[in-house]
Image (cartoon, rainbow, N blue to C red; front, top):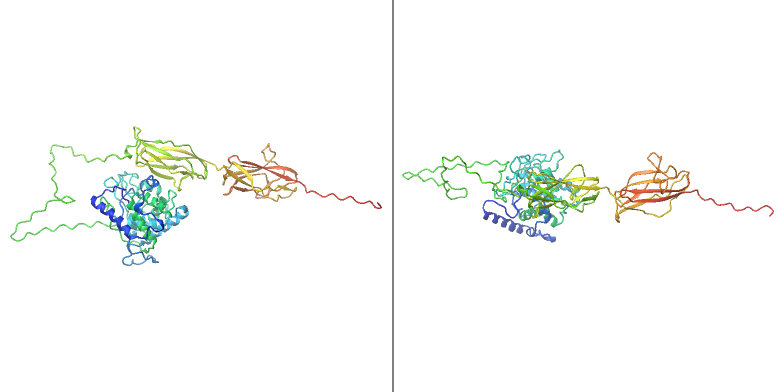
Length: 584
């Protein structure tokens, strides 16, 4: 769960201020060595442009648990996860299935995005703060929570206002969104960030394996290197744009880095303190509410007067002010207070904000980015609106970081700039669709073009003459290097043909030749490709009985051409010396 950045609304402003100060002060006192090695303190961290330009948070700024790590350093043990937890260990330990999910997610991310350097301790810290490690590990064998974990409905009453985006499919609420599952994703974020972490064919936010893997991809989506403290701060702030949250998560990260221990599922301790002090929070589905004990009526003392009944009080204390009498003749009920329209409600359409032509060669990053402006019906810009960019169709082109969906908030000019696109190997046109999150307006499509890898120059890597005797084999193989604008041109398609002449590119039917898999003569090779260094080494060449000079032409995508001369000649024989006549 996550707090509203800078203005968390909840019961009691004084309680809010005290809680924030306590978290900062106690956090600073618990880990004196956290800032060793040049790390930045959370109190000094500022949300980065990348973080603030994202979709705000994974959780919609729902409340979260504020319990701090124990003062005593953890004592790691090789627990097998069976048997009861030792006294005092459940608070700091991690339930077996939950810990397994975090470590599996780390392994998967190290393979998919090795440059991110995602530590499982970060997932554990977020899981602790968001749901108390899936409510102390109350999960089934497959990692699915025993009962749903839901945050409060995000109706703007003390929390962010996010109207329903999933028709209640994930949170069961068709009016407003609620954060769902052990990593507390809101439905609109889970829709694109969800992953199948336990290979059961489903993406379930209530499954810790799915949720942990999704959280890992979410944290790595901007090509951040989480071994760098600045990037780590940005990633945490992108999960929840709150300094208090960043500070708290980092304390748990440092605690888990020092070691932790595994405890049996279901034996963990649910944290007791929340950032919202319980305001508007849904009761825990796994813990039924205890009915309150009715007040015992007071027995009057003998000979005394009956005690006066206490005046009814407001929930906050103090006598209740009587309501004015209702006019019996009036049939018009008092209308409930209306919710003021949000910025999203005022969006009428999306407009292109000056996006340049989008073209890139396969394997390269696009140099231009998509810009979209949200506008009212009158054409005025709308700020702080979430715009989702989705790559449509069968393509391997992605946004930087490997995702095919990105959500970005519009700036003060109403403009949302999508992350840079990275071209895949499939060439052709790619469609990117911009839509408004939480608002049904027509999407805006952009076309990006991916061209094949190309070379504009070819050169031989050696200069030895290529000669062969009739019926023989050329001693040297032809090797060339391809470049594009002076840089190595890797993965470029090429064709090699033994041509009839310099003016006739058709394949000749005599002279040097290559061999196919069956040993038959072929004089055209297709589907060749340069390697990572731009090099292309052709197979061996052979000669028939025809002598003379022949031409080998190599061409690539992009128009690079190189013609190589081959010579087939009989070996020179020495002339016999003149004989001496007898008797001369």
